[in-house]
Length: 205
Image 1 (cartoon, helix red, strand yellow):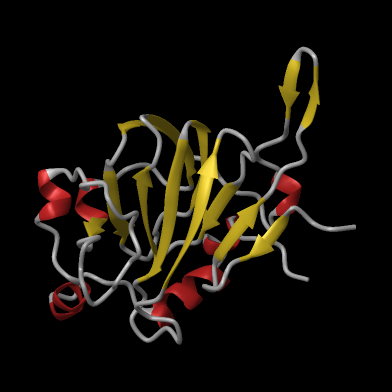
Image 2 (image 1 turned 90 degrees about the vertical axis):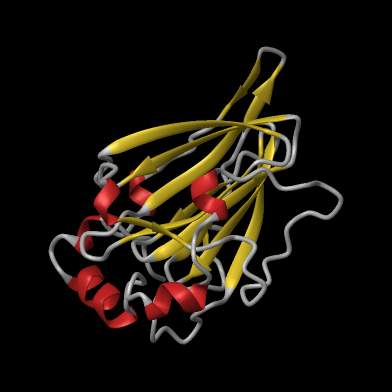
């Protein structure tokens, strides 16, 4: 049996592809399955983001520990969802993966604490919902400029990105590293192995 949760190319990032049951009434799916995670994800906050076409949010991440794991889906419209490895010392530091999330396939992305997250609204309007393992804490939240040429994220061509003032002013990955803002891979691994970190995470195998 094919499991709906499959790993992406960055350690700690996973893609969930639900089975959609449709009939003349519409459709039904399970968009979050606790038993698909190795440990139960403690949901501390659920966010809803509504964006016009071209909106670019991110790259956002938080201090580890405690970090903030996220489980993201697009319930209306479509977005290009991007996970960035901002963990210093990681074998894949500076690399990114992208997945289109939309209201047709209704896939979801899980990202572990320490990974950076961003998305770009592809449709005229896009509604993104995401579960968070810890509540929003402004003093622990940071960002990397999503247009950092060193990252080289392949954002959609032909659409001018719409960024918040905060995201537009965010440091490059190199600057964030120099400023000591980035989580370390060693700290992330230690957190994942700790009792607190074991509350979330995809099942191996």
